[in-house]
Image (cartoon, one colour):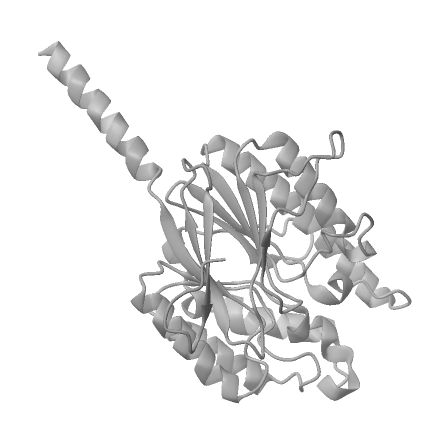
Amino acid sequence: MRRAILFWAGLSLLCGTLARAEATRFFALGDLPYKTAEEAQLSALFDQAVAGGSPFLVHVGDIKSGGSPCTDAQLSRIAEIFRGQPVPVVYTPGDNEWTDCHRLSAGAKDPRERLARLRELFFADPEVLRLDRLGARVAAGGDGPAYPEQVAFMHSGILFVTLHVVGSNNGHRSGDAAAIAEFTAREAATRRWLAQALEQAKAQEALAMVLFFQANPQFELARPARGFVGLRESLIELLDRYPGPVLVIHGDTHNFQHNQPLRDARTGRTIERFVRVEVPGSPRIGGVWISIDASAETPFRVELVDLLARDPITP
């Protein structure tokens, strides 16, 4: 009898491990829509992804063009598209939604006011993104400002994390004291959040980590712009302390990329377990399917999708 109990206990543990290591597949896009006509195309891409079985949808930011007016009406339309999806939407803000709103063509508005409004429309109402269905944990504000756009959740043994890092030098504008103050606080919060995510990954034995943010952090440059220094340092610290595969998905420059852009500073060798995917952007209407199997030799598989294409394109 005791042997039978031990057998079933061992089988249960094995089944739990296999279920936990089960491959997952989801759809991600960004830098879309840049014009009103592309809003319907965004919805069509989401429809295709839901029909394809994506358990959640990912938008890595820039839900408008940088030069178009920053209005509540435009933000509300996209929020309603997100709200209407039958699965949760993982969304991290882009620079066009708020940091670039100081531009004359965008209305010469205060970026901090626009960020506050963005948080109200997308994150204050849990029914817009429905991240609670994923068991998402939100970054605590502590004594400083809250960052509801920074979340983390486990899915199929993988830890998914959103970071608020945007294009246009991550909002770092020399000579603008308010912009520098906001950037400094947000950069510190982002670094804390990534450190907390690392501890969660270790505690829950995450098989892999996936990070979402909007900006292209200039991986190809030895010395990135000031706005991306903290992120780059945090990623290196993460890779030093977390032994599993790490995938970064971002947008910003609208050019699809799938590569391994980081090198070990000590050996000069490519860090093969770190992978970057940049989603395509307007005027190209598409996204990427990401398949993750942490036990495979190639943990992250990427399929590039164009709206009018019949079949995905595997790079």
